[in-house]
Length: 226
Length: 299
Image 1 (cartoon, rainbow over the protein chains, first blue to last red):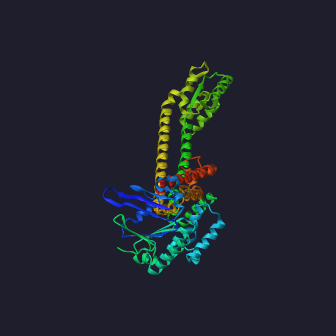
Image 2: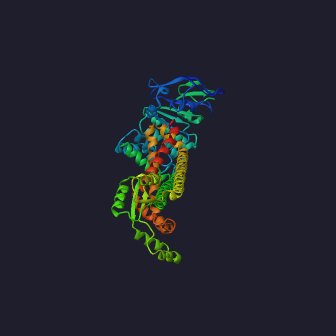
Image 3: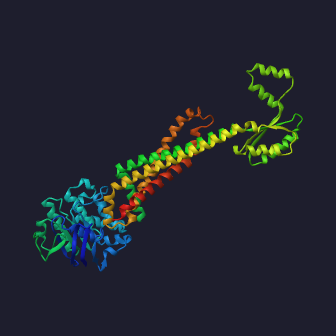
């Protein structure tokens, strides 16, 4: 489904972040990208979202090179992906409900569908009673659940989560991972970038370990080994 | 459907983002105020220039035995010229009456008139040009035409005054236009920079919108709507505040601008003023948002 082919990324001549990284992600798979801070996990995800261009190599998503998509069509690529960020990145002046429905609005969904689906995902993430709260009125865990609901509402083909538990306590961390696993079980391909050892070991799914910009380990049902 | 959502989103931004909306509103009110000021300044300067122009004229004086028919025929010819705004016939008697009225506190002159024993003043046509530049042409018309009943045309005596007036008017016009352009540019720059700052503050928000799949139109739209709303609201507030302001100031300003009521001018032009203020506000709000947001859309 997703092919990373000899991806290299350097900022200037000195700062080489990724060196010939190649791997594939199958449909419905759950892949954890692990490694220390600066290993290149976030850069890989940013490249997949076409936020950045690689220095060399290509990323094929459904047989299409994502970096050959014209800027005017990039939104179509991104609508196939649900993104969860470490710092939540909720729209500050929209309520939880509006943050989630925003994704459906840009897809042109009608009001009834939006109302129904938003209610459903709020139930899934356990935030039905916080629907009308603004991000500043929510805790970290609640914000991240809103972010997951936003990533999930339009039934994307892939969910990309970049350190989604980075700012959360162990209780909320467990909750978020449980949610991501649940989404994956429903068939959504999931890529999780994390440096949280306990999280990875708890998941028991495929683990790709990045170090110094290269993949040093690719294990089925792997564990975090550094 | 999308336009409705974009509009709703822009309205929400305006209402909820109180900080950036207030800052933009204050700046846009200053811009709308500037538009209003410039409009009124244009009115005052036009009035002043018209008054200055009205203060000069030339006269053609007729020989004593000139017939009323000849003078009337000449008056008709003059009025048919596009260069002539008015040509008023002043008979010998009217000239004398005016002279006496002008010198009613000068017994020596009045006594001299009585000693002469007859009316020494000549009948004349008092001519005002539609443009002060045309006095020379009118004088040529009178002097070079075959009008033996004209004794003299006083253009040569008036020419230095007319020239000074022309210089004054053109200098005044240039100063007013330069001031208007400078102020308009300043207002535009301030408005543009405020919008740029507001959009810079929203750059993360824009990035998120792009990453969750919003098209450029969907990201840009609410910012443009917010800019337009700011323009309309600012224009409305300034317009409403201007009503009592001009009502209070009008009598005071009339002391300096005799015959010009600033409140009356405002009322008679209120539709155009409001339209211009709103158009400038909306255009500036929308354009500056459109320009400022461009670079943040490249995510």
